[in-house]
Every structure is written in C-alpha cells, then in structure tokens.
Image (cartoon, rainbow, N blue to C red):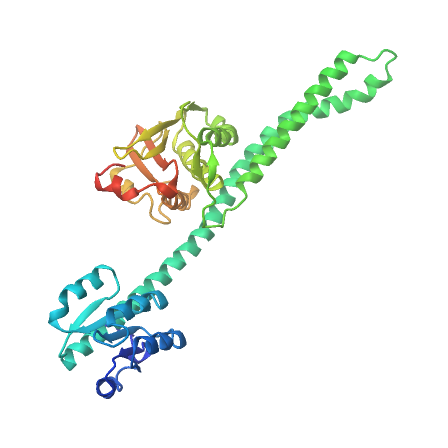
Length: 397
C-alpha cells in the first residue's frame, strides 16, 4: 500500500444475496475499511448511484435474478472508475476468464475465501483505484498546461510575425502615401493626367488589399490557440504551407535564407484542424530558420499509402543548419528542452508533437551536426478513420 493512502477514505461495496455473509464481511473489515452492503445486483446499482465515491466493488457470482458477472458489467457502466472483483468457485473459471477479458472485473477471488487474502485484495484494489485517479488528474493537468503553453507559444510566434508584418506593410504604404501626397497637386492642373491617376489609383488599391491580406493572415494565427479539442475540416495542406511561408518570408530574408517549396500536385483534401496545423508548420519552419545561418530550407509535400491501404500526407522540412547531436535528439520533444539557449522556451516542439498526435499522425527527426536537420510530419487523410496501431505494429513511421 502506498504511503498516504487511508483505506477508510475508499469505500468498499459487498454484494451477496446471503445476509449472514454480508454481516460476516462487515464485521471482519469495518474497523479498517468503510463498508457498504447490498443483497442483490439491483440494490447494489442503486447504492452506486447514491454513493459514487465507492472505490471497490466485490460481488458474489451466484445470486438470483442477476449474476455477479451481469451485475459487475452494469456497474462498469454506472461507475467505470471503481475496481470490480468477483467471489466465485473454481467450477466457474471459463465464465470468469471471459469477464476479465471483457474488462468487467479487475480480478477474482475464489471461495471459500481467506480473510487475510481478501483484505490484501481490497488494499490492492484501493491502490489501483488511487493510481488511476492520480493518472487522470495528471492527464487533466497536462492538457491544461498544454493549453497555457500553446497560447504562450502562439503569442511568441505572433510577435515574430508582427515584426515582419511591419516591414511588409511599410512597403505598400509608401505607394499609397506617395499617391495621396501628389493627388491634390494633380487635381489642380488644368489638364488632368488620367493615365497617371488611373495607374496610381489601381496600384494603391492593390497595395491596400495586400495590407488587408497580411492583417487577415496574422489574425488567423491568433485564433484558437488555447483550445485542445480538434475542429476537423477538409483543407489543402499545400495552401496552408504557402500561407506560412508567405508570413515568414521576411524572417528568412533577414538571414539570406531561401524558402524552397516543392509541393506535390496530387494531394487530396485532408481532414485537419487548419489553425493547429498552421501552428505546427509555423514552429517547424521558424526552428529551421533559427538553426540556419544562410542557405536554403526546403519544404516538400507528398502523398503516401501504407500496406494496409491507409492514405496519408508527408510534409518534410529540410534545413542546412547547425544540426542536432544524437544526445539532444532524444530530448527534443521534452518540455522546456531547447538548443536555442536564450532564444527559446523549449515548448514549441512539444506542442507540435501534441497537435500531430491528436491528428493520429507522427513526426520523425533526422539530423547530423553541421549538416542540417530533416523534420518529417505524417498526417492521415482522415484521422477519424486511421488505424495507427496497424502501422506501428509493422514499425513504419
């Protein structure tokens, strides 16, 4: 028994149609455990409704109206987190094995039971119940943490994009501002220069539309950063990559890096959460830019079908940067691990891994120090129909 666990805090329900058996069980264990009893499966189900804090359920198999296995199968639906045990004779082993395989019971206890053995089973059941509860609590905390760091990471990325946006917006603003400055003078001329006015008017409209497009794309990246559930809709992976490259072009130009797009023309529409996948591509390409002093970053997409006929899309981000050591490759997706020293938080790749895993996809990293890194993301065409275990059994990426 783990330290800090008090058996009294984890109620146990005994179910048996023999009243004397219930009295005997209660007298034997009530000093150490909180005991509830029920004389039938129906009464026990009512007890579970009024006492959802019950941690362990121990039922006799042979009961009129509803057998122990039948009752425990219903108890699993009513209170799935409770640990279920069956008191049974050796002659009923085939039925017990089936109940264990179906998950209706955690374990069985043979009759006649030993008082010390039953106590040990109850303590084990309580410990298992507590571990499952702790696991669920930690998982819920993990999801909340991911939501928070995802929001923080998105804001950091938006800050980088905003700096590039300022540069991109300044260029069209020069044309618009020049036109507005010259316009009053041109309007006062005796002979209107229609060709000049039409040319600058058209140019100004185009530049204003360009600014609107930039702002809209920046706003797209600010949406949905703290939502963990996926919003799956058909989308064009190539188009999303083009949008991200467009936004990061200024960041790449600052280091004289070429962003080379090699997009497959045969990609089918893919069911993804577009906002989250934008965040993945944004992180991966930004990481590649930060790791590359100058040169080229290649972004390639391809269609893939495995041996079971399951369709997916692969996205490869290949840089010619400093690379990652074998030791650091193993830590790459750990929270707060970063190779950027003061520049990074180590959260971006963890969030990428989480988003890709939500899509039932995978991410593979290959790198050699001094020669660059290749990040390969594989996303199923439809995550809701993709059987990941088939692929994993054969050791495919």
